[in-house]
Structures are given as C-alpha cells and as structure tokens.
Image: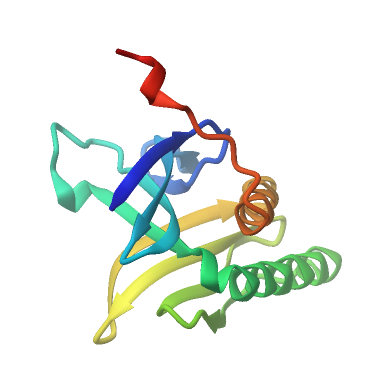
Length: 162
C-alpha cells in the first residue's frame, strides 16, 4: 500500500472471547492509502493473544473506494435485517451478499438480542480473515465509508515532522 496515512477513529472489530463468554473488542487500526492507484481504506484487527508480528493473528479488510456503494448497500441490508431480528427475537446466520472485490458480508446472531455484521475475505471457499461488528460499530463503519466516498477523511500531514 502506498501513500499510507493513519485515520483516527473509534471503530472496533470484535471477536468471541471464551474466557469472558462474550464478544470483546479487538485492537483495531484504520489506514488510508492507495493500491494500484485505487484509494483504499485498510482495517486491521489484532486477535487476542497476539505476540509480536504474527501475521496469522491479524485480520485485514481492504475497502476500495470504487466499491463503497456496494459496501454501504450490504451494510444497510444488515441494519434492516437486524431491526427485523430484534423485533421478532430471531437468531440466524445468513449470507447478506458479496461485494465485487470478494469481501463477504454475513449476518450472525450471538443470541436474539445481539447481532453482528461479519465481514470476511475468502478464497477457494476458505475464510482467511473475518471481523465481527455489532450495530454501534456497523454505524461507525458506515459513517467512515460515507466520509471515504466523499473524500472527507481527515489524514495527518506528516511532512511537517522534519
């Protein structure tokens, strides 16, 4: 990734913590950059128990600016389903759809009151990375994507640090 700049945000990805018997926030970092001339929002999340730079313990989501409308549409579908599932007190695990860049968006219920948007990168039917987002974080992600689409993300001008 080129022209990388860290973005300050409260966005957190979650994972299930068996010790706490609950979904817990993961250390999550956001960068803005370019890949092959395309603007990319890069979300990295470290798993619990990560020691050092173990790449197997870090998940990556690369959200391309050219597909932001796809992502927002899939997120909106999650929010629609989540509202319905809360009203009906349903639990389900269901595919929402796939973006043009092979990111898979799924709906996952922890229970009838707790639902997650799962974004994963899969290849050959194998999940390489997956990230769980509860509704508050889904809304944060959606807002970030709208800002990304409109070139409104605030980046740091590091050239002043000489």
